[in-house]
Length: 342
Ligand SMILES: Cc1cc2nc3c(=O)[nH]c(=O)nc-3n(C[C@H](O)[C@H](O)[C@H](O)COP(=O)(O)O)c2cc1C
Image (cartoon, rainbow, N blue to C red; front, side):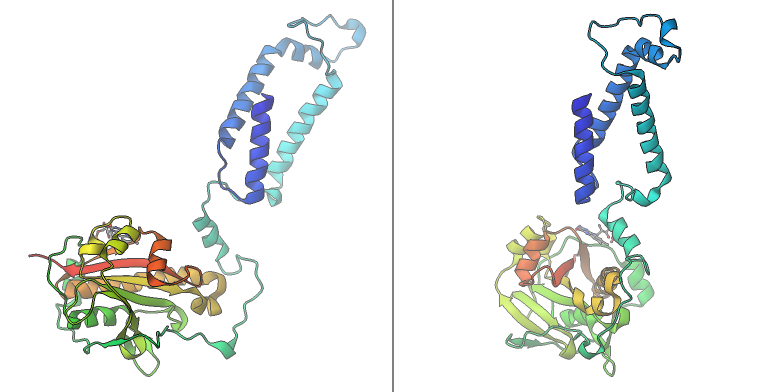
């Protein structure tokens, strides 16, 4: 009883201290301790009944002797212990101020609550108007590949929405540069040059998402890694080479990342949106990646290609492949796009 009680106590304190939602065997130790306490009370019920009888010592009968060991705790000590335990329980129950949120709540739920307006308790945020974040990255030293103007001659939006499916089986044969151009333009292309507004919406028009393309098979492009330069609708070549094996490994063995003609990798430069939206920024950034992902799905479907979103990947491996640090800029989402049969 003492061992399980001590373990439950220490593990509970450590979990509380480090904010762990769970601690190995903490609950089981607590249940085992409670069980031992009940057994202990049941075995000693005669002695307890004796303690609880408030009669002058002269009237007392000798207590039944369940064991030969001497009793060290007198009645006053026993009752004091019981009342203290009960009082502690009631204080914990009545004063939620001292209680932490339910341990079943995961980090996502905690973040969601924390990022409600005013939920973080941080000072009102101030925007530094002098340093408006630049809404795109550039690789000035990288060789550039010019893309043709995106020409959309697909079926209607209604037909495209009805036909969209996640497609993971691709047939050989290159994509054309025109097709890649349409896909990139649908993802993040500038559609309102005057203000730099793009195909997908962005909270505060801050555009935190960067688009990279791993080219496996596109006519006119060397296989390798490219960055989409939104400002002039070109591709910046970051590295060349066959990246199929590396990408499949980083995608936890999902073969379509190697059999697709291209794979899109969406990263976020968190600071852009954090500049204005602070603790709420992360919500917006994930939503924006979703918008872009859907645009890529729909454009691929309209072109008669197949696309599949990939959320299951090894973050560090993909970040390494791109050469981003995973802190200021990190991978959020992958999408394979390829030619499909039939
Ligand atoms: C956020 C997100 C992550 C996903 N991750 C994967 C993935 O890692 N691998 C995969 O094969 N499909 C992935 N999918 C595709 C879903 O499995 C697919 O959308 C779902 O089965 C519904 O099928 P549909 O897209 O054809 O309507 C993902 C979809 C979303 C939206």
